[in-house]
Length: 383
Ligand SMILES: Cc1cc2nc3c(=O)[nH]c(=O)nc-3n(C[C@H](O)[C@H](O)[C@H](O)COP(=O)(O)OP(=O)(O)OC[C@H]3O[C@@H](n4cnc5c(N)ncnc54)[C@H](O)[C@@H]3O)c2cc1C
Image 1 (cartoon, helix red, strand yellow):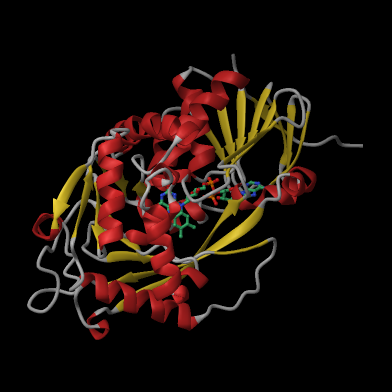
Image 2 (spheres, rainbow, N blue to C red):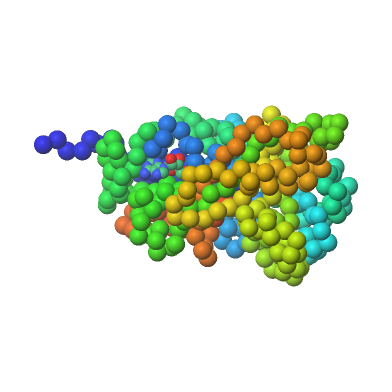
């Protein structure tokens, strides 16, 4: 009887060619290892290409902040090496209430990260926010931006050119000691990383259940930038744009004394936004289009139906933020993204077998932190 096909022997095998998997492959390459990547699709089409491309370094705390600082440098280096848009643009947070500005002032005073508090003109000079309610904001210079549409593909091509072996359209089925079994055969390696994103429960349901991992689905849109007159006064801008809803979300702002008052204001005035767990923000693609979003819904398995009312709410809020009529926002694309989410943890790293790591970012900060997380995991696994 024929045994399983042997696909090769490597030092490190990674399953999943999203940004978390590729970050591990890049760390292996950096250490001079023979690396292979196994991806079930013909190209990565998961969370890593559906996001804002926002490296939200400043908003992180604890372990995530440490990873984000490493990831920032790696993104800028990879952008140069692999040839994709990766820039130290910083972020602008637009404040539309006294509470939002108070949180930003408190965060600046805490001195954890560099923060430039801005008045309304300072915000308007940097990004196309023309909201009537704008009272000021802050510039966060640590943050970076990448083009999510090109970054993952460019990194994969660069890794392949540097000697990493890719097995596309090849599903990982099972890790055994020293072997990854795939739909095409076996890869031998003393170190195996399973970075299959929100589908980690397909391979390791017990790990997913123990950590209470669920799928978080987000609605996103791409709109043509509304041009002046009556549209954007700043046509090309680098920084990602966050809002007061972002301050409620990111751990870095959690200790600001005015945060409870800000939350209470949203609860009183905009329960509709909290009901869809909106993080109103946008970034710009190199062609000028805006990536706008997002909303969050958590479940193990989601119904497949797209709620247009949620898109309408996102469009209305974005139009208000930009200070343009909704009718000026021409929608070019709509999609839903999905990432792994778990209560009380931002990262899941489990070792079901010696030499095997199951790795997932379990909140929406995988672009921000991936390279720092990977550096830690590979250093531990391949020591
Ligand atoms: C709408 C949206 C907006 C976001 N915005 C941001 C942001 O601005 N900043 C930020 O830091 N983070 C953001 N995130 C989060 C970030 O995108 C994710 O944390 C990150 O992309 C997760 O990367 P990943 O490689 O784990 O997952 P994915 O990109 O989903 O990749 C997993 C890969 O594994 C493959 N795979 C699965 N199972 C198998 C198998 N059995 N065999 C082989 N391959 C397999 C899949 O095909 C896929 O290519 C956002 C996410 C979404 C959805």
